[in-house]
Image 1 (cartoon, rainbow, N blue to C red):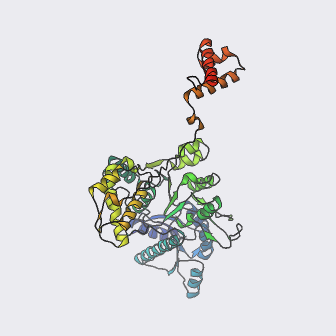
Image 2: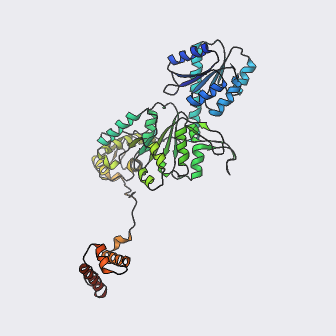
Image 3: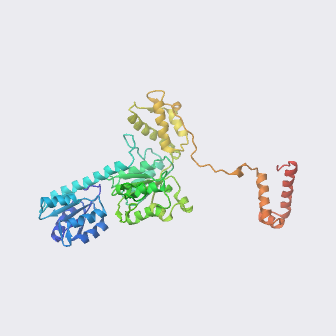
Length: 464
């Protein structure tokens, strides 16, 4: 039995080799990964290397006591529970140990089954604390009673996406999700978390767009009291909240360049510092990075670091836009309607054939998010209680693609030619021979074109 949906890792600290062997063997046989240490120094080294979920430590150690070890462990990771064992227990010692941060204080000898129960409860309590903290700092989940599904439909594009997504489940590497605005990157990220080995832990989300650099850094890393003006209290960062779980960085393409090397260090070293702090904190979180922007183009424009790009782009999932999966639209629309009527508490609504046709003929620049908005508006303002027709559907018809402003598009072909000839002549200091050679035409042809353009300016000729 494990606490995080995978093999929980334990660190057993005892100077008695027989006890380490007995405890380690028991928990390994029950699916745990176990590391061992015989003293305080060795325990700290093993902790840094293995990042355990829980520590089982003897009170008396060759180079100190568990009360000496506890603060060192707490400095490395405040969330890891510690279970203390001792052959000479007392009420005062137990109270002191709990005050110092121990989760439990047990007197030897202890039955292995009882110790396992204590370990399981301690791991469960830690997970509950993480989830409670996540609810305090992360935005609320979707108000819909049933979460959206990322693979609705039967198109080849969505089936290939599902196949790739299932293939990378459990791979402990950063995952890069790309797709247009509203295509469902956040939905896919939640599915990856909920179906992966960290499902029992927290999913923490941060949108890197729309927040100034200082706020993104503070939200991500946290800060110490007095770290900067306005830091009136200690703030726990989302990296700490996501420890053992999943961190979704939405719109990572908009992350400030100055923050990107700090994120890269977290991915490489699995540790970070709060703003204003001098010590490193461990972090073990699955990173999912999502963006609608072309990261390769941003790298070429020096707006995104190449080293960070290569670190997060090993596993790349691309979500197809809705206009490329028209056959899926009826299925997606019905799925959205099912959740909408449950949320609004209204009777089931069906789409008529003309409504489905209208949905499939629209280009959907806002993708599934826009589809949901259109259907929600239609459900609220529908003409009948049980159906939606094409007349109930109102499309925004907003072009989300950036428009390129080019004054040259307003020029005639003759004017473009005249201006180009003038530029080449100026470049060659008025030398017609060299200008003709640069233009790839003969000297006589260039004289002819110059004469035509001169006439067009004086008498409104054919090049006017």
